[in-house]
Image (cartoon, rainbow, N blue to C red; front, side):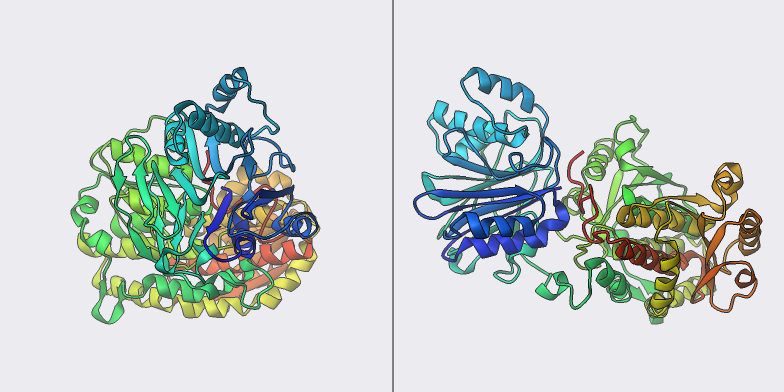
Length: 617
């Protein structure tokens, strides 16, 4: 959930770490801190607030010299966001410094034991407990830092990614992970190394990176190979050096005011990149190695279980409609956070699909491990190459959306639906559950979706005008039927996330079973009323709202006449096959949320209390 970055080498560490923290701020922005070693002393600065606040503080407080340093941007777990609880944390002697992402669940027991041994603590964090445990192990066993880290981590329960260094040995950094990602960038001739929660802080310096696996630690020394060991048994691990696929342009705003707006506009390209090489319309083929190589698992499955959280869960709900209609396979969609705790019935004839943008979502990763233990075939759909879910699943498919920096997911949603649609179409062909003509029609229509998303984005200024009328709303209702019920949920989530307006999504027919009591002349109701799918029923729902003086914002198919006569505002999108309408109907809802949030002076890319990747429970 937090962001870690570090550097050791021949350059000044400060600008590299600050730049890295700015790129990682989507992971947490309650507080930020940096520590540098200038050859004589460690220099520490940290503060409640954002990296910009840290920059102000360091400009006046500290020397920014030094070729070794680590930094942290925090999403608070243990201890409220304040200067003292901010990372980095030092040990009692001041010799060891640590940054940490995750939660040490047995920290209180360890803290009591260390207190009995004479340690005192300045913060409320589990991280300060961990760094002092490492120091105590180092003293007690008279071992080097790497060994002390290994022994200490074998005594803790929880999740972590850490970077630690010892003032007395300023030529090395020790990193380790369990449940939270950590990447190591390798500079030319091993003269410098970079450490970060993801590769974005160091992509302009190197394309070579090592992603640690769970229960692995690494000792990084300038001029030497990275030494990787298993935490539980100290065995050596061969380093798997990967070439980074992202580039600097992908993680910059490129002239847009916010990453969220940039990512909304990137969706035509992202969808194209997702089906490129997979959707071969002229040949009437879909090629997906993860599906082809495991076709029998899918065809013999009693059911598909989809596990996900947040926006990915909404994509899973859309997939439920698609898989059941196209491939006639029963589907259940589960919140990963509930699935893992309710002793679910899973058999060897189940296929579990785990969906996660980051590939690091803690609850989804835990659900994957549970399903594997019970013998299910597990397929991952994620965006980040080399992520934990990508490595943990039996097979999978990447979305190729490119980096998504804005906390509120946009292109992740549409590219996930694209991948899941390709899978369902391929299975329908294998099972013979869709006619050849319908199959080819859907291939053709899916190939046209990026062009139609481009057209849908042209209503941006119109949506902005609508947003002006509702920026002071306190409640909002989103309604949809069939494939677009999950889009109503997603639209409501986007509004809640970035504008802090209370919003709820409902199946349109369920409005009569309670929510209709909320409707009055101050209640905006966003209704998805495309010509494909239960159109007449949705028109009836709109009339029920109007009779109670509700304000209607309708998303309709181009050329609609009937809803235009009733609704207060109409947003038109291109026509497509019903199953693919979510790829278009979500666009105006993303834009509406964005513009309302901007007009309310909300921090669109960094909404309060949220972080991009939920790597803690």
